[in-house]
Length: 310
Image (cartoon, rainbow, N blue to C red; front, side):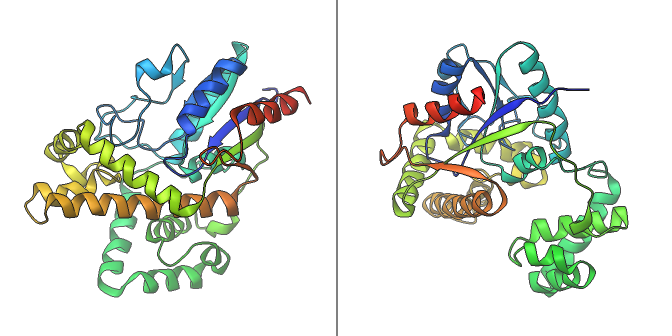
């Protein structure tokens, strides 16, 4: 039986300083970092995923980065299994496990110990998803959501109409397990989590996101995205990531480069808003603002040291 491990998680939207904070805290607390980002698992996708560089790592061990090729799938069940294995291995080495990233459902699977035994992706999963995506194209997202509301009102109440991916995911689970999505069995997490959530004033956050996109373009994002486009583009599991999918239409000659870049900025801002909503509504977080100096790294470290000593 595994003993309870204290795990630090650094979460929040893009462009609020998660990576920089995680490195400082890892040095201070003898930590090893597990990426909680759904796109950083893919090799060759470095700029668009804001992946930490080997130089930035400065000797800090990082896990679940560059572990897959772009044609390979990585489900939340895969993440949960591999992250839990890394947490145990890091703790056995006498180091502090730290999860860093903004993919809310990944972290939720750990903190709420979601039972994901039927979450493996197979041909049935693909067939169900393809069916409901086709229905959504023909009849609209509201129609698909209404089907979920009939099958599982409690689940529908928790998932917005606009979040088609999650609506279809719920319908998939219902069909594969024969049980309501809202009644999927849950366990108590064997570990204890302290969630450091970073945020800042909304308009400032959006400006930082826009600047980050411009910097990514300057750093070579187009070459990276073109390579992904040539591997198969949106047909790939990795091809739906923000910062890549918006450029595929440019490569196909359908829109201008300026329009594609503006779309990346818009999609990134919308995603940041969804990330903030998720962490506020789904997790018990401790919120800090490093961008405007309302919080400091030292303050966050002191909070964590007190918690670790309890």
